[in-house]
Amino acid sequence: MLKFLSYDVVFQEVPNEVTLAINISGCPNRCRGCHSPWLMEDAGEPLDEAALARLLREYGSAITCVCFMGGDAAPREVERLAAALRRANRHRLKVAWYSGRQTLPDGCSLQRFDFVKLGPYIAPLGGLDCATTNQRFYRIENGKMLDETERFRKEEKEKFVNPINSSTFAVTK
Image (cartoon, rainbow, N blue to C red):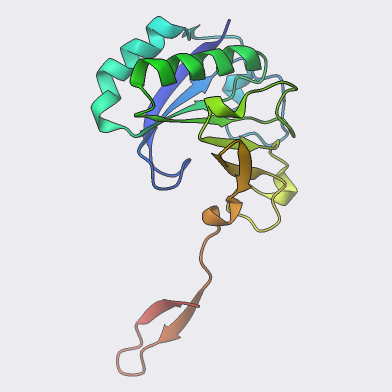
């Protein structure tokens, strides 16, 4: 059974979406340098269809996406909840899954998701915003995984100094 410790409305995890991110506990990946080590514990309240419905009643009109943050200990349960979410909302809300696994589990149905992030956090390689990251963010379209990791890269900016008042400003290259 999946459990969750917290949730929040976020704007960064899924580009161009207002996302309800549900932080699932019991993570088996044990990534060194993990930014959420408390999610390794088996703690929190059950994440089932009733809990999901309660969250959607509270946030449904304010969000465009639901993201399951974790769930690698029970991927079939994540997939089942994603399918239930699609049915309940008639595909109005997009569905995302952040997994720390390198690949999706065998037999995982891409049709349940609009977005999937794959890859464990490896500190020297950085997160999605680093050019060296091992993690990948995919948009799912027509059963294909389209890599959109580049959307997380911070734009490189060049600094200029105003010769009149010595203030600085940045220009995107």
